[in-house]
Length: 207
Image 1 (spheres, rainbow, N blue to C red):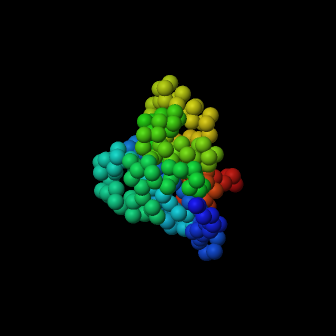
Image 2: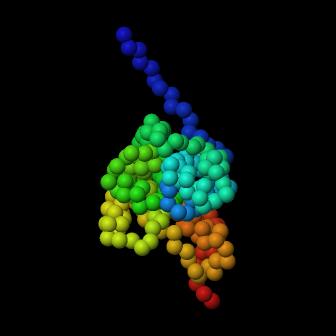
Image 3: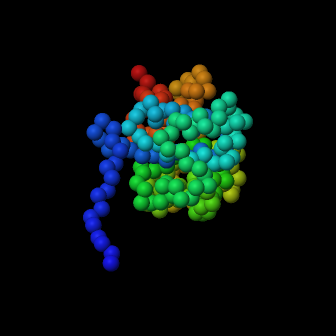
């Protein structure tokens, strides 16, 4: 005989008494892994956001090639780090509630897989979950120039609900360092999730 009892759901994590937000950060193998690193740094500094990180195998290699850091250092900034081959991870299910996902940077390979639900790794599966659950999915696409196949992929992504946010700096801010250029894109990406930040100089009407 089965016995039934009311299930008491665990409390959601809180920050200063308020429910903590939860965002997935995906880092693909595209050039620009420092964008992902700065996002993780910014979210830790801002607080109130539980971060779930997934690095692809290619991302781990790119981190080695482009930076003096290790993948472990990236993962240490996240609240939870998931293996890209773990399709049983919490973020692979729509029943695991999140505010959405930011893929930064996003390679065209990952973008294509997301566009057509080719869920062969956890990054793509988590992005697909966000789309099917109508959650925010922001893709910082890192490729240039774009051929027609790329453009059709981006159009497909926009049609199914993704936000396409290329890392294009705003020169009105007169950036003086690479960090400032990266911070502009990171701040714009966080804006998409309604996360208040002062990572870049916002436009003001000239006097």
